[in-house]
Length: 272
Image 1 (cartoon, one colour):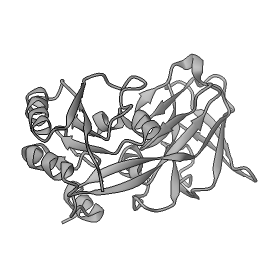
Image 2 (cartoon, rainbow, N blue to C red):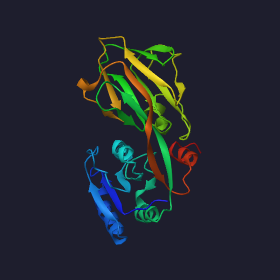
Image 3 (cartoon, rainbow, N blue to C red):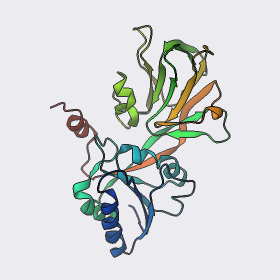
């Protein structure tokens, strides 16, 4: 059960009504004798969640993704109040935000660990992703030629616009748009999906969570960028080959007590 005495409230001020809602939630938390740490920086600076018991994000899924690195580092559970569009991660509706906060403060919620991917691209500190790691070409004049291997074998060389390596959580994001599979969030696997492959038989591949992928570029004329949960890394930081594996860290996601992943998919994707 959560024992909450200090809550970070991360606000995306670009979302209409988010600032006013943050003020209301801060008053509710203070009335429960809970210290509030207001944050508007995005993504979070290092140390922003140190000493916090829980983190609330006010925005959309992108706002929640911006706290992942710090939340994983300090093992702070996160819940998202959705003022965005789809809300695959930010599962609490803005209209019920006040009661939702009260419910979380009294422990009326479920906390589930979500796997993270880790990207080793030659920098001193490895980056983690809750949704995906994307390697994408930055020009349309040349196709990327990306050679993918596991620790024991060559997988394939992909002529394409890029590759998406997705967690089960991120399977509803860019992976889905690129034709990749939907994966149950507790499945111990991750997906590799090519973006606009030259060979139409190049489809998504599913790997066990204990696998490590090495991605190398074989076309020096196709400049490539690496994006971690939608944030593009500075070009000077990226070195190939890039190794992608399951992180030893997890992200603790708070959801309503009656939350159902498949009910959410039926609603968001308009299956019925």
